[in-house]
Length: 272
Image 1 (cartoon, rainbow, N blue to C red):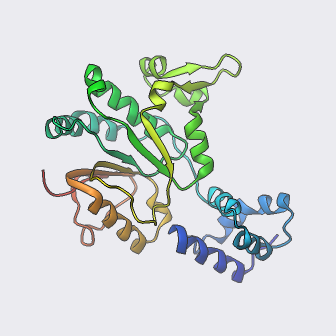
Image 2: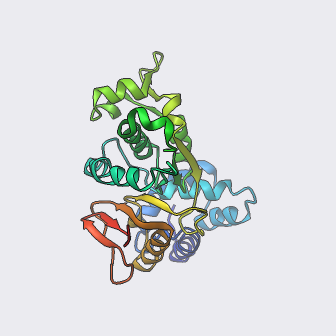
Image 3: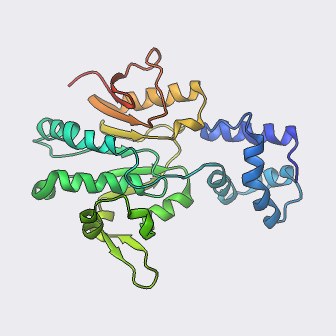
């Protein structure tokens, strides 16, 4: 099934307008991800499929489209230097700054299938130790993909996915499923992560300023203008002195957004 230029432009405009995802010049990739789905679904053309998406009042087809177009590739211990910096530099600062309200407000804006937010929750649990029960260390994890979030909430991973993780963390935070040999995140750790579906293009709903935002490896989907707008929203929702972590291959145009660079891929909002 071949996608016409008109069909591709229609799809690209729709996805860009609502989700900020820049598909222009990626027609071959788009066709590769959708062709089998359309064939199995019985659509005879991309135009017929896009008509069905537009007419679907439940939003199910649109959610499935976004799931197909976004790559949820992540793994435990990814860019672990960020977590080390969070543990050794950021958390001690937050403990001093928020010793009265004892509230930690961290947002993982690209939760994918849960590896990153669970890693953050494990690190927070270790860092606070016996003090943890005195603090609210629950973190918010969001993603636009409902399929990825279902997997994250289930918290089930294959044994090989945990091989890069310290054995002590596997023993403490996971339970082996005898029937399958897979590992599931413990109930206690799940309670430390609040999962929500969220489109980064929508207005941010935060009532309180955030202290830390992880927005790693998601801006690859956006053009420069969309990235700048998103980063400004993140800057505005951070408290003075708050931190932003992005992917190692991503960049920020600091002429447009006034973040201070702490080190490559770690940025800070001015203030204390």
